[in-house]
Image (tube, rainbow, N blue to C red; front, side):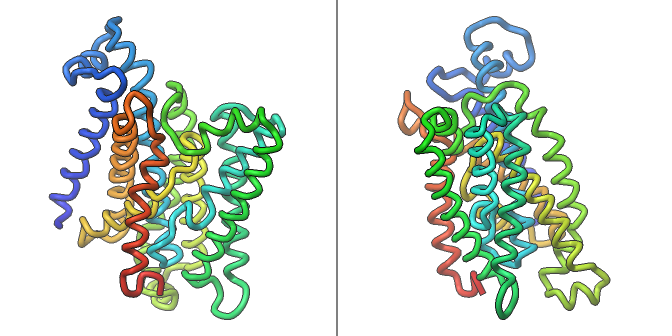
Length: 329
């Protein structure tokens, strides 16, 4: 598909998902009332629901989904592994573990405090995964990175469970955040995310040409004048920042970073990562919002968290990718 067609379709999909996010729920709000609530300071019940409850939720979905989409695309390029994403490489669980420890030790409460510990946990996880994968013959190959990330995620999840089961207060504060959800976020959450999101996006986008070169192999990238180690470290640092901000705000959302970059690469056939990265941001935002909307209606009036819905979508995608010839070669 040409870039001219892909971009309008992606923007339209995000706009529709955002409108549904503002309109759909236990109390259905007509689209006209949604627009009126956004454009005018009304005091009707519909306006209050849209502005105070659903608008912050939609904003968090847009920003967290975009962050995870870009992070996934960057990690797949850095590792040359189509199965790489913040969850499979251990970043999401590392960030979650940082938040759990902060809660258990009484060091943080709410997003403003979570984000620093989420970032620290993601950084530690990234270093451990790379250090484990780099040992032995062949260095940090794509398969070894995926295996190391999966093993570390399982171990981290086990340690997190031990902490949670030994402290009921920590469990009460953490359990709704752990599954990955957009509900209950306040109006200031996105503002607190922005510095981390902007820094991460700048680092990743600055490496777009280098990521294109990495796809050709390290030696070719060096021959083209790129400093391979610097590109990898810069892009991975940006992906870690994006993941930490998204996980701190919405919890560990699964599979957005895995599925979205593949769709973005299918939609654009030219432009390389300069096109794939921003398109992944749009598609990630749309996918997470769509998952959140579906979660509100499948068991209404109860809700299925967005993180559960993205996992239900992502598992079939993962199976398809694994079955494709050369998916992990």
